[in-house]
Length: 274
Length: 287
Image 1: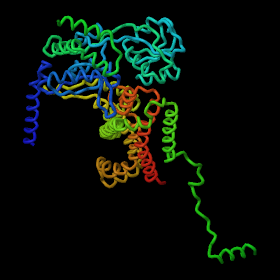
Image 2: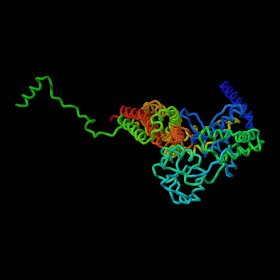
Image 3: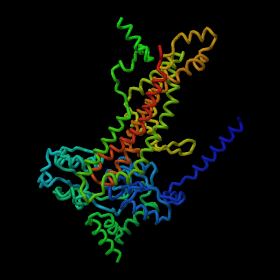
Image 4: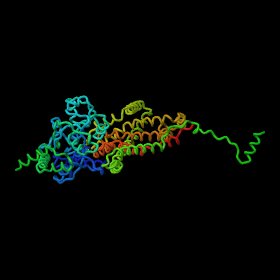
């Protein structure tokens, strides 16, 4: 009995001693662990999604890989969704968020947004050409499909008084659009452009409006990493991706329509470097 | 006279007129039972959806069947997680439920009252609501004597599913014990068995076979409830299907893929249901 007790106590003491060595600095922690844990999307093609073997792939996954290579550590990817990514970061379940996160003031209170931003998207709708929409105001009281919890929902609802029918994911919303349950689908313009370019069943659809509400996307880190070696390293890395044209190259690799934001950033940083 | 002759003639061929026993099975109206045919019908529905999809699909695209085949390993991975969650939940729920059920038949009034309250509370609360509570109230990791014990979301989901399982099993235990005739308790008492001995040596062994069919039923219900955890952000078959659909970005796959997942659940739960029925028949109380 006492032998057992002693064993249990020893095990506990070892665990306590081990945990005591936990490090506050993210960079040191990553190096010690030998891997960086990145929160990414698993349902946002082509930024982060699954290939048939279940592996995560996409432009943001490439960014995470490049980051891990720079730090010379292994990479662990954790799928996140909009509602849990900042929580995971602050609970230290992940070291960094690269998950199509829009940069806004409200979120800046919770996490530190890495500047420069790495992408910029906007809001638009995809609708049947037959619907003949010309202006955002045409959407008043029309049934429009959307995605639950998207940041632009509120704005579109308030400005254009649409009748929003929110779905869990893109396939459900698209199915509803094609079945005629709604006349349009409000989503991010990069996805709409990519989908329309595929043709086929999308021939009869269009993106009728000017893209609105441009919002920049940012990598997120914890507040204590705002000026830490880790945070500064990530900032430098993003600037480098812009300057060297890495992002433009990978944008093309993943079939995303050339973004004016990336071209602009590339130009600006190239000139500044000279 | 003619009857006698007939009798003789029948007897001549070596057969005697026999009154066949009254067959209860044939007399009773045919009951609706789960039969293999129902499984075939479900499979036929899947094939139908796939074929309709194939006809509608643009010719340039890979066929639906090829796409489903391509994603099968990944989908099965997700489904395996459903089974894992159901296994762990039923184990935790059964152990806790057994304790609670015995508490409900305790001689001590406070224990009985507490057990009854807990059972009724969790038995009558919606499963999804309990899941939400567990996901958001239980911390992400525990700090115990300076050691951080991580508490991943799927374990929280398992606890959330175990609670209603516990309450339902508690009722199964209470019902089984009460279904044993009082005479057995009295007989045991007259043979100088203590209450505990009567319970453990006489009553509970008989209860086990009575509890088995409802317990298996509960397991099948639990397994079919596991996709609920996808709503609280735990990855399983439902999440996997969503991710596949997002990766394929083809709306014609929506219905075939969800039907595919449904068939996987059916294939898993159907033998359990059949086995439960046969056990019920075997253990049916004969009066």
